Amino acid sequence: MTSDTYRALPLLIDGSLSYAAEGGVFENIDPATEEVLGTTADAGPRDMDRAIAAARRAFDETPWPTDLAFRVHCLRQLRAGLERHADELRRTIVAEAGSPVTLTHGPQLDAPVAGLGWCADLAESYAWETDLGVAAPLGVPTRRVLRREPYGVVGAITPWNFPMQITLAKVGPALAAGNTVVLKPAPDTPWTAAILGRIAAEETDLPPGVLNVVVGSAHGLGAQLAADPRVDLVSFTGSTATGRAVMRSGADTLKKVFLELGGKSALLALDDADLATVVGNAAFQITTHAGQGCSLLTRLVLPRARYDEGVELLVETLRNWPYGDPADPGTLMGPLISERQRRRVLGYVARGLAEGATVALGGGIPAHLPRGYFVEPTVLTGVTPAATVAREEIFGPVLTVLAHDGDDDAVRIANDSVYGLSGMVVSASEERARAVAERVRTGTISINGGLYYGADVPFGGYRQSGVGRESGRAGFEEYLEIKAMAYAH
Ligand code: NAD
Image (cartoon, rainbow, N blue to C red):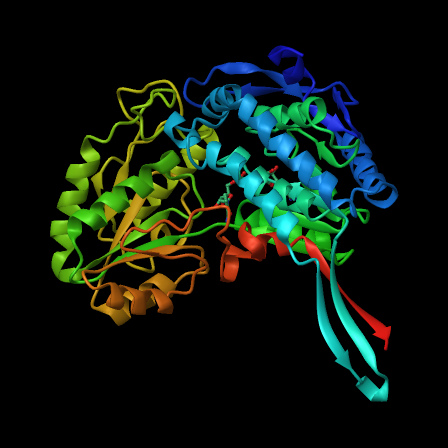
């Protein structure tokens, strides 16, 4: 099948690649050029209904949930297929997500594809049963065994910013655990998901219905998936506002809802910190995929006495930051995903100014990039913890810089947020940084620039940044029920 055909046939339902039942199509836009890359099938409620029915049937009526060796074989085939098509995927992620190509050699593509292998190995070596030994509850001698079983049908709903990474972080463990999956990708990045569906259909032995991909422009498809009584678990990554809606949709059927949401993570520089380390990390984080990452550090909290020095170094560093064409390997920052998102980001800058902040760098559309949804790397100073730009997720290359008056105050500022996804502490003393890191209420935290990212590391948020963990053993276990079995002894 040629690339053009699968782009027209992006749905994978019950083992077949197909058009949308109603025949609809929608446009896929390149955010770096604003050009239409092509059209893609626009699934509707009937397609989603068929996909859920297929996933239900595959779970209830085939050996998939119990045949571990076959599942591991299929996951390894999927990994090999994705590796064979790495170049096509790389080009697609750059074109439709606007991601710098350098990121596809890490978290946008190569790392999560390799992570499928880790997931298959984990499933193979996992202790699916635990013997609790013999006891005599109420005087009845009993041998107790805990058995792990898949939930059933998993609805996976994903955002556009890391389209392959987030998809595989759900599909990998969900399938390895024995569930069947209906994937509903974000409308902004339909082809990455379509390629995954095509490879699953053509290059693996995954049985019909085990993995379904339903690409469509309507967010209502996600709501339909979350509400459907045939779905047992919803695994969602996206904004906190949508996460609330997903939880509400799942409430009527009391399904398990697993949520990876937004963040407003803080980089805390303690008063003995090396400012070059602080600024290097801050600049890299705020420009990574143009700030469109949930766990990026978007609040820089400097010691008050070193605030001006830190801001000066930061502005100097970011002034010549290489950004523009995401396909250029020298580019560290591409565009935002859409004009809507750009308006939103510039709206936040305006709000920051209205609330008393100063633009120390950027703040607008770069003059040298008239096409594409670019925003300049932006530094807002004089920001108080109460300001909107210090509290809400901007999802753009906008760093807010705050001041602290010592370690306790830094911790207070970091925790003064509805979010709790990530953070970083920088200090000349690892021990001191560690003591502060322990008090920051987030699911991940870096000490002096360490990276927690990896298939074996659980990732997720405290408070309104999410419920549950993705990746690692903990992420795998999100997709498993526990059954306690009691044998008369
Ligand atoms: P979004 O919440 O707008 O959409 C995410 C997905 O949900 C899309 O597939 C969308 O079609 C679907 N959707 C929208 N409304 C829905 C509804 N009512 N019911 C069910 N599904 C619905 O998010 P986005 O703009 O695509 O992504 C950006 C957001 O994702 C940011 O807030 C970011 O912080 C967050 N994010 C979180 C993580 C994490 O792991 N914590 C990772 C990446 C992105």
